[in-house]
Image (tube, rainbow, N blue to C red; front, side, top):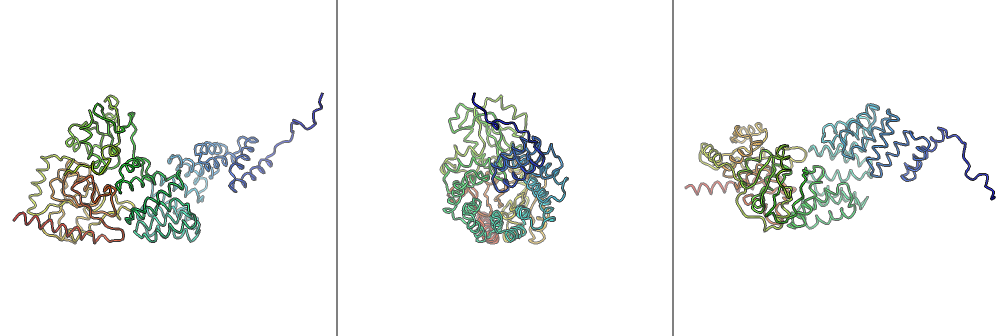
Length: 589
């Protein structure tokens, strides 16, 4: 028989001590810190093999899982670590990060708050909590968290930079710029601060400064995707159309799996639509469902999606998307859809129902927010479904496919007659409805709208009765116009301009003209066929390479160019308004 070596398959009798596992853990941590994730993971797993309930090893395995993009596994491993040691604040903070990246914002917030209960001075936990709160749309609480972090470490660049972003979202651009500049003073290699600073400069229309920041970051990292995205935005705003797409294309080529790729692709869609490439534009417009940071709500129904096939023997269900303005715009295709289909069922916001039922009597209109009506769809024999905006791919494939018509919505004729008689009581003159700003003035929205203080050249024109179409609280602004410009803007308090869309439509239809910021007031007016002037900053994608908004025949846009003041645009409106008033006077003579 062959002799067996003395040491072959020998069973060790050495006892594994705490010192052994500690030494192995320290070695694994050093390897982990050096960026060797695979090697560190192997050593952490050796520790687990020796001590299956070793809390730190479980935690760091969770950290590695997160670094590898495996957030659910990270959550599970760190949760096991917490079960072994529920007093370690860093476990809870890192668990919160893994939860947040899965969209579990409330759970993340709870976890970060627990970390701060365990360690009230934990600066990183304040910052991580701030991120989770912002993702949960709690901007003000996020700001407070970053301020708490900075109270404990005034030079903590992550909190400084994140707070700068939030000040930009709140419209406090000067403060935002100061914070990003401070970050770059502390750490000139902190790349995200360059693009965040550029984004703030874009908001205040300092395009040269914004471009310079993008160029600086590209000098440090020529593959930095966000810089190319911002450069495309700058070109777009300045009207350098031919230079816009190459920057977006570069961003896509550099990092096709970028976490913000859906936002880049959506920007590409708007670019293609703006220049008139509707085929590519509508195809990429489907990326709006993933648009960041405000994804469109895609409702889920158990019906196949319409792919442009004949509807002659089919029932189609259309669900609305986005805000009331977009719902009105996309309803411009409903008459054709009704004519093309055996049956059309149109779901809409409750306040749209009376207007749509009158405008499209051949369709079945349901309340999209009514659970019973939605549940009844299962028994409606629906063959296909479509989001309202997705109809464009099939019904508006070219600019020529947009019909030339004065209106596509029908107001209540009796109520229109009533409002015409009410307006006639004001005396002779032009009846002009006005809305000077959006009802949502958060963040950078004020930059896209006028303020009533700027309307003096319009209010100074005689022969006009101004009618309020501002659909939120504006009593102070109406008083300002009365006291400073000596003009009465007639506000009919019996009309709920926000909730009673049908009555708002009747009042609007009785007017001679509507002058408005880019709000629902302008869109409704144009859809009703009323002469509408829209005052806005920048360009609209709905032009499709032409010189007008293709959805509305009666809409004229007065553009404020980047770098210009609102005064020039307001004066242009005033000059044309005076011409309209004079023309009406001549016609009456």
